[in-house]
Picture 1: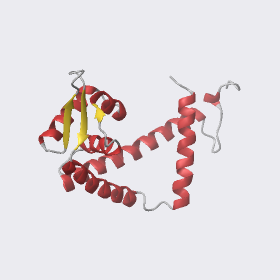
Picture 2 (picture 1 turned 90 degrees about the vertical axis):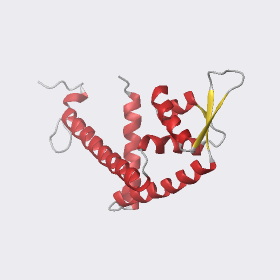
Picture 3 (picture 1 turned 30 degrees about the horizontal axis):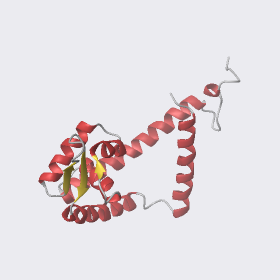
Length: 163
């Protein structure tokens, strides 16, 4: 017998229990996200011989011209310091970023884009925007707005129910 007070057993339009509908929605969101990410990774590799983590680091630094401490960079990207350290080291080797050690706290370093890094990122960002536009081309402006509003509502729901 269904518990009337539990949203897990509440029927939704179309007869699907909320739990099943929620799982299907989660899987649909995940599959869309994975497809977009896979295509972006492939295009960054084929067109720019770079990776999505490198692009993400450059994007974070482009938004903060004064630079970011390594800990701030890893926090903004939601990855570990270890993951960022390797990516930054390769970007330094390629002349795309610089790392300056803090003279007062030698354990702390600030990372900034070089001119070459900014130019490379801006070219990648323009292409990235085109690729996303192409993938979303079959959605009208109204549909994009509606989907954004629904996803905002979903995010609020997720944040309201922490695990």
